Image 1 (cartoon, rainbow, N blue to C red):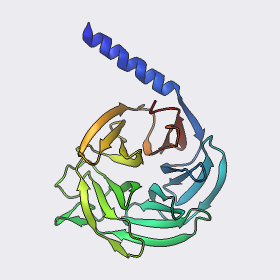
Image 2: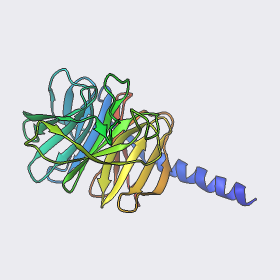
Image 3: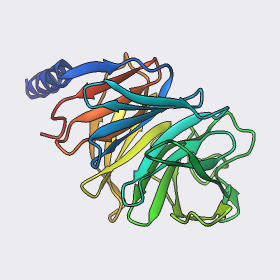
Image 4: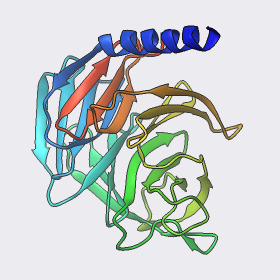
Length: 250
């Protein structure tokens, strides 16, 4: 009886969560998303090298084709009005001006950590999610391999330095999950999405432990996530859309 009550509670909670979700924009192969508090808008990238700025209701502000890049994630440096994009395959970050999307710099990420090639060259996998927190960049490697195997499913941590040609992996987060496709920080907590497992995970980076797991709908291909200042959740869906889930963290 107790198990039945718990199961019903979980089912009702999920139904309530999904009832709040809404498709706000159609963007082909949307792969990364970030919210700007300054502009109160969202920036979305896709696999085809394009970047879009949209309102929190999904209206297009501007878009630009940057070039032949496989963008898989995006984060923002509000202080300097910069956007930092994760480029899969080359395992590098592209730095753009937030205002006009002009390229400011390209910086490669070194592949090895403790002599293990965690970002393996010529792998089918590669860097996906990216998040800037304080003076560090957190970048996920989308993989099914557990660390310490090569091409590991970990989050690599590098110093946020824009005057370098290459950035060394300073540390990793071995979180224990696979297929992490998106990262963001909200109120000092790291949130990550596991696409194949349809999970959103909140994670304490100080204690190196999971805070909570949220089950997501199987009908979407979750590739990126971000929160606005009201706690609304936005998801970049690789099927070609942007989702908004109101008051997700209520």
